Image 1: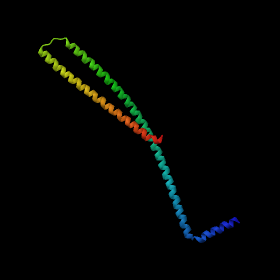
Image 2: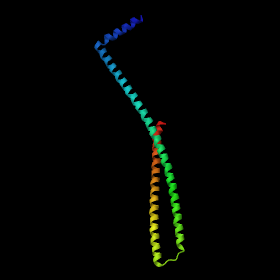
Image 3: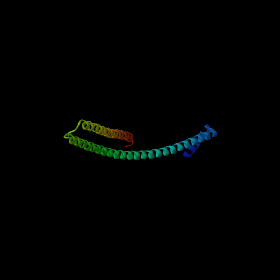
Image 4: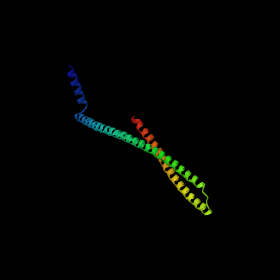
Amino acid sequence: MEKQLINQKNLEIIDTKSLSELKDEHFRLSRELEEREIRFVQLSQREEILKKQELLLKKQAHDLNESITSKHVALENVQRQTEEIVKEFITQVNTALDKNKHMFETKEETAERKRKMRKEREERRQTYLKLKGEVGALLLFKEYQECVIAELERVEAPYN
């Protein structure tokens, strides 16, 4: 009985729609199914690519963080060494100046000593400026590294 009702409904559908309309609809539905399958495959591939990119970005962030850490340690070592060199240099200069105070000099010797002192002072000043410039550059690099770390943390935040 149920079979007869289903057959009767199918016949009614066939009667209301022509065979060509049914073929057209079947073709349209088949094409839509194919397009959806293609879109699904594309989305799956895109998802895989995004996962690989995410892993690559995490690895790069980790490597960059390690690099920044090692450079930060190197910067601290250079700063410490620079401070030690400057302190030793100041001590040597003060010792040399103390030794020269007790000597008696003629006017020419005094003038010569002053020329030498000016020359040494200028050399010390140049050395100091050079060291100060290097320390300044390292401090700027350290600030840059901190900015990069902050940017990496900001970029990684959505993935964590």
